[in-house]
Length: 89
Image (tube, rainbow, N blue to C red; front, side, top):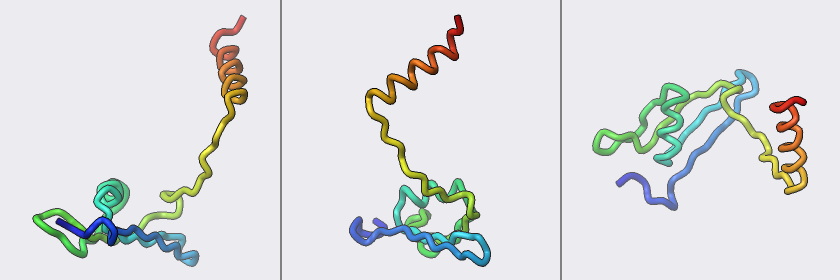
């Protein structure tokens, strides 16, 4: 059963002195992804599955990049540039 959807959360806290992120999660999707990134300490489990975990990530494992949004004109120009590189005359 785990936590009700409205009570699920994931928190990341950065410690600037160590350069590490402390992570806590009760969101099943995030727990599965975090399991591939670091060793997790299971705080609570239910039916053999973790429902609350803590872990530590390196600074480089967390990214806060802004997603680029291109206009149709920008996409077309990029496609033309790529075409010229792939098919030199």
